[in-house]
Figure (cartoon, rainbow, N blue to C red):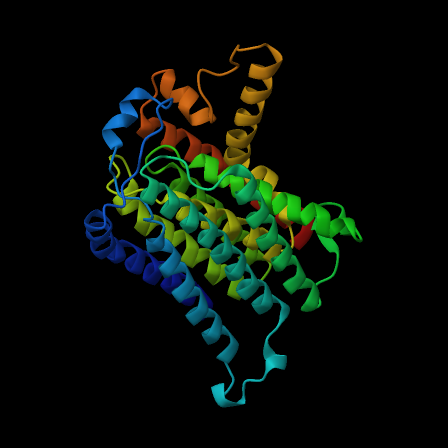
Length: 343
């Protein structure tokens, strides 16, 4: 009961901080002229969004970071005198949470550099793809090293299979998965409220899984993340008054990966992150098909949410349908985790 109230409180406090931050951050971004420049080859009706403030991701970044740190410290201190809290009391779960925050913040910093470059140059081009990848792999490798130093092994849990030791390949696969998902989440940010809504349901799914595993610190972390995303949507839902920018989307990508690794089931990113993956593979397929056919397109536009826009779907409909799909696959993943691992 106490932990349920604690988890609920983490979500509520994060929601309030994120939502209230918007009232101060958005006017500041407008004053600094930190507005979005719309791509020339994007949907024509997106031109009306020109100048909408970016870097709104700071709203949920602040909320998630503050609430997670405070809730984790409280978690560590329950039943202990804070003065007598030793490093030995910091368990693997806590290490995963703080290492996860590092991964999310590192990717958020990469996104900030990218956004800042766009704002200064007044064009929708920031860091080059190569620069982004180098920095993202550096962040992923640093995260993996932190876990290795903390004593986390090379094993992973696969539902209905059990613990699998991948040896040295664990590090290679982990780095590739992290960078891939981070960029997939980044690609999902293209319609008002889409990335925040999808990530909200992703965090809820992992929260349920963490709760079933009695990983109470991770449960509160997921709850805070979900609450902060919801607070951001107050300002980002259509018509958006602010965009999260790469600052926010890359942070969320790192966050989602870190949570999946924290519950020791990164393989569940496949079903839970189904929308992210569809967004990413729609771009890969579009580019590959375009090159192979010398100019023909598989989709009207990629990522896939733009294809549905070109088919006449409203932004609200896209967000609603994609969110429902994420919620359904999240529920399926929770059942898989329960019957394949917990039970």
